Length: 117
Image 1 (cartoon, rainbow, N blue to C red):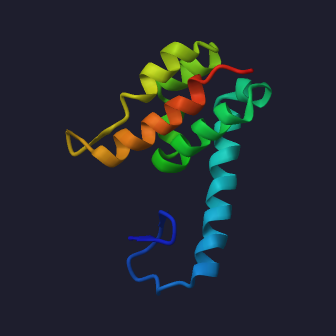
Image 2 (tube, rainbow, N blue to C red):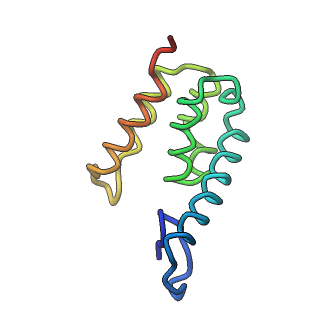
């Protein structure tokens, strides 16, 4: 069962308040940030937008998916073009392209590949 902003919990978990949802979100984002930096240490010296894009990916799909992905390898190689292409492959659910995931991945891709000024 999902509560709040995508936090997974036991199906018997009681309803929560918006304030509690915010606390879960903050904790989940810290977990995603820590995992992202553990598996993609190069992001510590990249623009914040790149880190934000990969943290969002990790928040959405989990650290395990990031850890074993070609996406991670491309990030750590600082091959932003290839990383962006890999990111755009993560749009499937149940064997079908999910429009919401495609939209999310495009937003992440824009952050990942944007040129610095």
